[in-house]
Structure formats: C-alpha cells, structure tokens
Image (cartoon, rainbow, N blue to C red):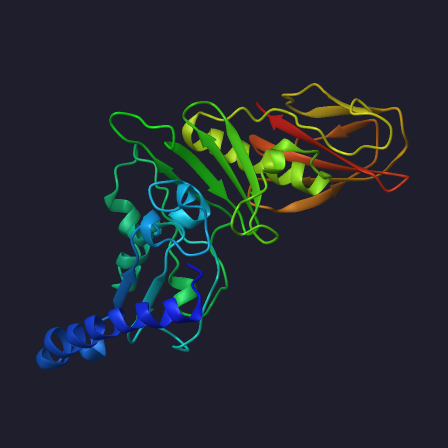
Length: 298
C-alpha cells in the first residue's frame, strides 16, 4: 500500500498503540514476548472514500492492485535480521503453510487430505532470510451475491497484472510503469515481453480457475503476425517451427519463469518437458521477437 508521507504517519499513529497494547497486556505480562511471533496483515485495500491518489473505482472491493495489495508485518524471535523490508509476492493463503512451519511442524501436509489441492506456499524462508521470494505469481478474486460488475479474478507477477472480469472482459497492466493502472495494455499493441507475460499469467489463471481467454494478441513481429507457426500444438514429443524469416534464438519458459534455450531447428524434441503450458520466445535475425504459447500433453 503506497501512501503519501502524511497519510503514512497517520496510519502509523493508529497502528502503534495497538501493537503496544498487544505486547504489554498479552505478551509482556505473561512472559511470552521471547517465544511469540506476531503476524499483522491488512484488510483488502482502502475504501473509496479514503483512497489516496487512485481512481475510487479501483480501490477496495475491486481486484485492481490498490484493492488487493495490503501490508504484511511479521515480528518476533523467528525473524532473522528484523527491521528489513521485502517486496516479494505473498498470497494470504500462504499463511496456511507458514504458521505450522513457524511452530516447527514441517509435516503439516500429511494432515491435509490427499484429494485437497494445496495452494499455500510457506514464506518461512523469507522470515529466516534464506530467500528473497517463494512464489512467482499471486492470485485474488472477488465474488458477491448478487453479482456486481466489479466481480473478477486477478493474477500478477513481479511486474504485470491480468484481470478477468466475470462479465468476460480482461485488462492487463504494467505495475512498475503504471502503478495506478491507468493504461490497459490490451487496448494497444503489446511488445513481445508483454505478450509473454500476458500468456503466462493467463495460462496460470486458467489452470487455477478454468477461466481466461488466453487469446493471441497483437505483437510487433519481423514481417507479419503469422511469421511463425508451431505444430502440433498441443504436442507430445516434438514440435515443428515454420517461419518465413530466419530465426536466431528460441527460449522456452514454464509458468514459474524457469527458462532454457532450445535448438534452432525445424523439428524440436520436447520429450524432456513435463505436462503443462509453456511460453516460446522466438528471436529473429533482425532482432524482432515473437511469442507463442505451447501446450505439452502426454
């Protein structure tokens, strides 16, 4: 949550007495200060009436960045190098995995029915200062009864955010260049990097929820938008890349951002890839790029 300095001080003035009372009456008085960790997390965004520097229609009760990005503070003896900050992505669901591990219960997964999907990722490595991040995307959704136009699902990575509204429309933003989300990138021509991120986020959202168009959008290519084709797609063991222009490099990445180079051949083996959705970033001799989504099945 980004606040002007004055508003930040007012928020601190409200929070600090609460923390002081919590420590004094619940911890210090019972001798629990040295063996108790405290997790403080904010509610979902600011109400439109008090939203700072943002369109009130993109504040609380929406899936826009300002409506779902909240502060998270962890304090206590488990925190290594206290006083530091971390801007990595964390989902509120990650508390489900983190709290048991804070209590030294590492086998908590065995208590969860095998038929239950676990979305939580423990951020204990961040608390222990053993890692700077634990996940490459964060997901949120809003649903009301009766439904309202703002109901949506959203997924973001370190830079980009994709929103899929229950009405069927989608929006896509660059949170570094446009943190207040004033410019929907899907209304213009995407760069190759933007298209790669849009395809990756959309595929992950579709895996999580079953919704998302994941449609091919316009991107700046060497000659035209059909300059390269991938066949078959979905594929099992091999794919063929056919292009009207010479290729310089082919990079494949999974939805966690792990990438590797593929040989620049007409036929490419994918037998070593696991089942899932991948992004192919293709660079041409003239330096232009194209991005394609590849689905691997068995």
